[in-house]
Image 1 (cartoon, helix red, strand yellow):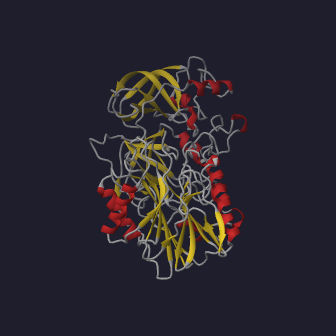
Image 2: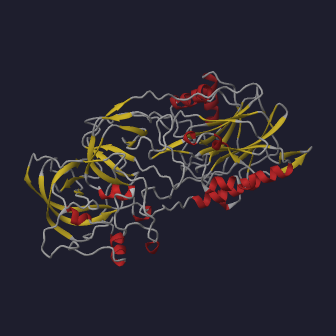
Length: 612
């Protein structure tokens, strides 16, 4: 079921009250209209994001039905075929019925009801609101009418500037600002809210997901990469051509097509423009184009040479023994065939031995054993492993799952230096030993008592030896982006509240790396893992502060910097960072998951090869 298929609540009273207090809602009579004039859809939509009629009743609003949704948020869209000629006012609007609508596309109707501003995800989400009519009374005047001609959305119609800066007096909100659809992309999309729109043949930039939706771009030249995606490379360089696509046809009647990044949604895709909780503006397709497979293949990195140490990181997405053997086997093949069996592999999201069963279990030996056996069966090495069990339910993730980082290493190529008896609450430190930096606990956790790691995965540090040269690897899984507002938030720029925690986490890891370098400025240190932040973020800047580390992914061309695809943006979440002594390395973001409808994880693994 599509992600918009969540129950709608009545119009959010707090939003309307705040808008009234700010003078953003004008009352029940449209501006410039005489008392008693019939209300049209463009009067309801108005020239800002909030309806001037929100909270009021409307009667006998005319229009033609352009789309009917019988699942999830049930209702229909209807549109005025005449309009007022103002590009800022939409001529379509959603009617929330709550039950399966009795109207059909092409019905000419008169709709009475309550105008409201519904915020998908609730007001605290920061999402923009959807103007709608609720508690409707609907009269069908005639049937079989032509649907109003769609607005064709193209590369030339969507502005290159993303959004106006939010009004400081309104807390950074753009809700009260007049729409400028020829200037800003978000304003353009908002001016079409509820309108019947059409896109032609378009490239897929976000693969079909479990909610039966995909993303396309109407701007094929906008920050493209060679595999067909659209790269997100800066907070100030948004990808304005992205648009989510769902189908109005129930999946039981017509399965949603499977598409990978780089495929093409060919022909005409047409339907009303919705706004939902996950991803914002969405073309709810009454007519859906055909997916053309462009043959995207999973990448394979080259094997490391005899004198090269290959270090990789891979988020295996809540792996536990209850997962089907097929998942273990697929992940294992990825390690062997696509990652070329790296010498050291840091895993994130290894769950305990009974997964999300919340019974106090914290050991993960069965999970790791099942995975390493699958790797051997796939033709890979007999990896050994090291980790530190977390305290029960102290590291976030699924309750009872106790996710943690785990080191796998190939004992034929590299050895692990075991030192000290660490537990979840014991911090590893750094000492100078025979002229080199050494960890007091290996494996050991970094700074576990620091509040930066509260309800989050603590970094796992390990000391390895490759050809007699010590190498310190720090495996990380920083706090998630949960709680951040979407790019389509009514706050512009959006609030990214989760960054505060990751900034503290990055400062903690940076300080530890500096301790290692203080003990030995030539020490080889790699900070790896799911950093949950971009290479241009404040988090990465804090990790690399004072030259302690370099974000190795920045060695790649900008178009190749991504490990994850979210809302049609190819972006960086997973990273490997290197200390100054590590030079002449090769880096590869190995694209085997994020761009595909069929995924073994939602992350792409990263691998770095160098000569210690």
